Length: 503
Image (cartoon, rainbow, N blue to C red; front, top):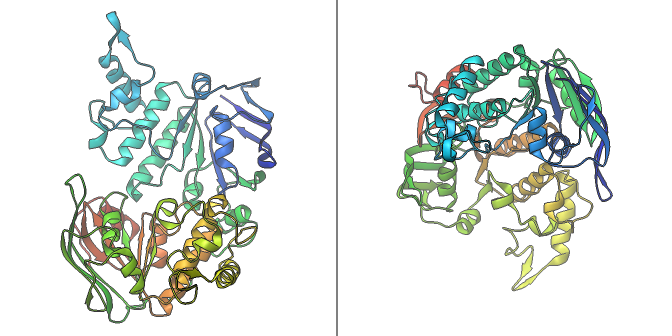
């Protein structure tokens, strides 16, 4: 099936999200879509999938114009989509999830589960997906859950498959397996639109690369294009993809965690006897697939949750029972993994968010009264220093792009003396230009003697920033290794393999 987009435009009031986009997806082609946050990729895909109606332009399938009134129309026409956040029911089996929405029945409306199992087995064998139709979703790894999403789309006879950031929660081995699945789908005639911000993956699997910037197609490139060339097309300027730094051993331990154990509200043991230290002037990176206890560990370090056992020390002082306000006052900077939930108040202005944990200081308050002129002056200074793209300091943070929202959080936390910086997923959902900036600021903080703890599911980020790497799996630190450790070995450790190297 050939997909052609002609002059597709989407306006929201006076804002143009997509501007006269032309695009052709040939049968059996892996077409990669690159662009910064806010470039218009999601809007374009939502129009292709029937979630939005174009303002102008048309979508043609095999030369015939289409008019999708919803995702059901797109699916019926042969377009399937695998969303970044899986749409699966955890307590259902694979077969039950695949048949959900188009259930097969036999007499008296009884579900024909065997027909669903058979369909899953046939698709699994045909495309080398290796999925058990009777497995419960909650019992299978995220990489296999993603295969279930692909089977769901194929079960609906999808000839064109949209994959939205499909590698965000996968180990390196699972990413390699997904690439193999994509090649198999291509070989059997399925077209794939692959949306990602990972330049390495685009070059590994793409047949053609289209770059969107500020709602417009700025060019296409072959997979032989360099990462630097692709990044420049995305951002509109040259980008330093490698972090310039010297590896360091670090000084004395500033932050020490000893035998930390955390039980979540459901009674599950999520952090299991974890011990580590972070030294002044070094970056300790914690690598691991999301959901292996990293979130709960970081929250315990800041006092957002109290550890059920163990001890946390800052420069030798026990802070295990401190709350977040006390921890921040002691000199801990915190960049949370979910900025919209824990990092800022969306309805507050940029200037207000820049002093969220500082407004009680003498610099910004006099008793109960805030020093508004000082708060405004601070905002203007930080906006310039951290290149925050905002119309005014009074602009609500919720209206900024994801990268600029993250810069607001970074600017606030880096704008005071720190003993420890804890940054969890510091560049999640951020484009390459903002990644370059944030990485440089983290290394500058480390070079000033701050102890830096980075948690990231992105191996490229872990390798780029870390002086030592601790790997978490199933609530435990299973190994601490050097940044010279091969990616394959680190990926095995992330999947629970027995460690062979320590540092």
